[in-house]
Image: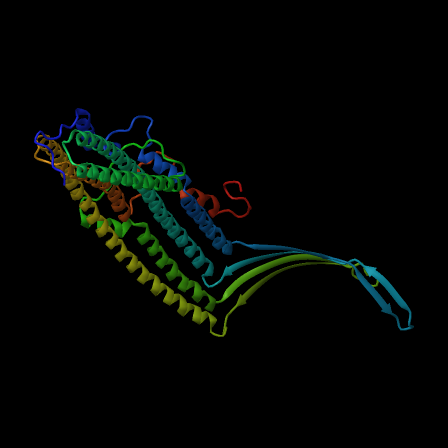
Amino acid sequence: MGVVGRAGPRWPPRFRSTGRRLAFAAFGLLIAVAPAPAETLSDALAKAYQTHPQLNAERAKLRGTDENIPQALAGYRPQLVASLSAGLQAVRNVLPDNTVQGATLKPWTIGLTVTQILFNGYKTASNVRIAEFQVKSGRAALRNVEQGVLLDAVTAYMNVMANSALVEAQRTNVQVLREIQATTKRRLAAGDVTPTDTAQAEARLSRGLADLNVAEVALAISKETYVQVIGEAPSQLAVASPVDRLLPVTEVAAIDTAKNEHPAVVGAGYDVDVATVSIKLAESALLPTVSVQGSVSRSVQTDTTLTTTSTDQASVLGQINVPIYDGGTAASQTRQAKEVASQSRMVLEQVRHQSRTAVVSAWVANEGTKVALKAVESEVRAADVALQGVRREAEGGQRTTIDVLNAQQDLTNAKTRQIASQRDRVIASYTLLSAVGRLDAHTLNIDTPEYQPEVHYHQVRDAWHGLRTPSGK
């Protein structure tokens, strides 16, 4: 290992100022307000909320689920069927005297039948209740997907910011290492250091270039992920802060909130309701059905040999069907529905346990990021002080080139961990908000029109006819 001369290395002022820039500017993208115009995290969340394909697909799915309501309500409404039959009929009659008479007839019949179910074992009522619970479960599923999309958007945003800061930090590090290498070469020519010192500086520069390349690759990947989640390429990103103000104060409160509000738990609860009412639906097959049917018709015959050429009919008939034995189908379906209901209750308990675990894990992780960030900030300050001290000692001949390089690397590593900790701090707070079930556009106060699933529901609930959707398709 080369040893500096007694006079010690005289690091140029430009090198010293560059080193300080690394200590204070590497994380500038995360701790300083970006110049206008800058895209904020709220802007990115608004874009994802409006354009994300998965979220829009779930909304379309819920609109399809809304149609279960008018389909179920159709059981309360009359059924009208019109019929028309017409055609040609060739007739050949042989008379007793073997005389043959032939004719081509054109009979036709027109009729209208109206059927109204008066009682079907509460089947229609059960179908309506099931459809209502399915809609509520679908809304909870939509909220859950919304939470996942928004959390992905936060993660993509913070990854771009962090990786951008890492690239800047590595570029500054490379610049410092280039200056150390140039200074070491000049001192080698002056006989102040040995070739070992220049080799060490060369090695650290190569390492710095490799680290810069890794950071640039990670930034390119994170930008592409940003496009996938947000819908467009990132521009200048503004500072993002944790959402501690929206979080429950204590861990117990967070667990209670998730137990009552998390969309996965709420949706599983409605699934239990669907399964419970399905038992009544299966039992309805064992009950009688009462209906009334009215019909009118007219039949016209063109056979001149008949005394009647047309017939008009009108009738009103009541009908009662009482099931006696269906081979055991209804009984089996009832038993099956009871087992499905038992399963859904077990699933609900499982979802509650999973929600609790997710909250506890997110709470611990969020608290851990606070501690980690404070520690790494102290590390950065200490590493910066240590680097300045090593440089001064090197100038006095008490430190070698490798000592300066090591101190420089320690500071760069500390800044890298600081960038990661800042990113993790923000993501962890949003993850906890998602775990308690409150990561939604309304809670975050995103500047975008909020999707209201109730609007489509009321548009189609009482629709008696029409093929077009409320959107005009």
